[in-house]
Image (cartoon, rainbow, N blue to C red):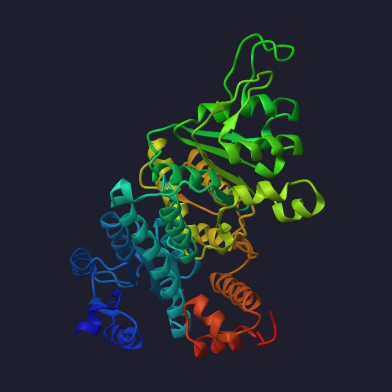
Length: 457
């Protein structure tokens, strides 16, 4: 009993006793099966058990010869839980009924007779997406004090980043944050500040690459009246303004060598001189720097000082690119979807299946910032409740719905996912199967069905 209750719940709505029993025995090893034979019992079971995924036959009594009762059941199930993943399984009609079901909110569609391996693969995907959305909901309900200034991530690499932030935040050690553009380096810096003893002081951020070389010294260190043409009054610099708090130096690799010398002196002695001034000014601030550049290469070619690097990099924090954060893409996408749909008063928005697939497959060269901007734009521009891959301006795959059958599109997607997993893991079957959420025998069977060889990436 305990083992059964530990399995994810799957509701099967099917009026044919024989098919219902076959499905139960085929899937009972992986799921806790709940059975229903009509709309009333399906809704009762759904409200009671709250399964994440439903297999729904379109041909239900009292009109088993048409899809109308099944479509009505689909609509009512989604009214109870809009994020439920409902897979239609039916012999009723083909393309037209599939499109109607998908348009109503079904997650996927299978025609009878059902291929068991194909069904299991689709269910794995459904439960994976549903579980991520459930985790996001739970994270939304957690006290805000547990959040890293808006940073989200269940991936093990991000959890390591969060652990490092907890440890380093309570110290005064300088921190160097490394990572590609758009990975959230400033958010990590703010999280360090918010968890430090300096949280009540200012957080002063400066993008070193955005300031002209002729102005950066004055911007950082301030200037005295008359120090240069246009200096009509005394002005404090960013370093001085950060006293009692945290100074965040973004794109530190872009700082010119003469300014690097002055920064080094400041880090060593905790004092500065304004441009045109002679008085030393003590500054009590904690320095956090960030870059997407290779500073070690800069040290070799003479564009970045080695002594400054080791002063800044007492602790190094590496933020992984979004493409390497397995499981976090959909979590973040749903977070942004909730945020922007609330801001734009468009409640009830969800991602269509093709959008979910496209989100997972996209390489995200712009990382979290790109994901955020794509979701924001889609929410603003779309007039539908379900955001598609086209709304996100992402291609969902090589197959075009106008020129292929549903079966062909699914085979194309399966082939692409298998090839991608095998390529990523250099043809290692066990690793590829683990990533796809299927067993090794199932992967071999799918490869045989799709005509893929083990050596073929």
